[in-house]
Image (cartoon, rainbow, N blue to C red; front, side):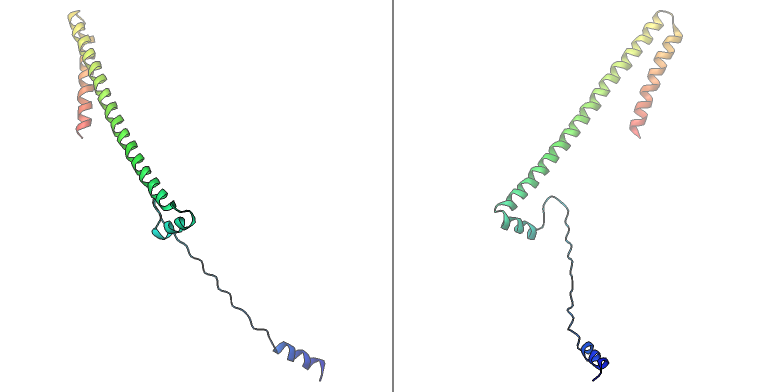
Length: 129
């Protein structure tokens, strides 16, 4: 047999090929509490971890509600304080306009009184929209 025939017989005998398949799984969740399957996994690694995660989520929700309540209360206080100081400024300007009228200063009284009234009316007109 020739050398050439020997090479053909060797190459005809191929080794079986292995087929490899990769599978990728992606899981995603949003929110403070993971799904039950993941919680049970945490609990199997660290006993009581699921309870701690749930407690942490509850405390976080309570904290968030407290912050929102504080923000609303603070905003309400700021609005009230602004209204009070607006009243003081308006009354002071009107009192000065009256004082200017008593001292024969009609232009000063007109500017102070008219400007104050225009400011008050425009403030209420913007609030009503």
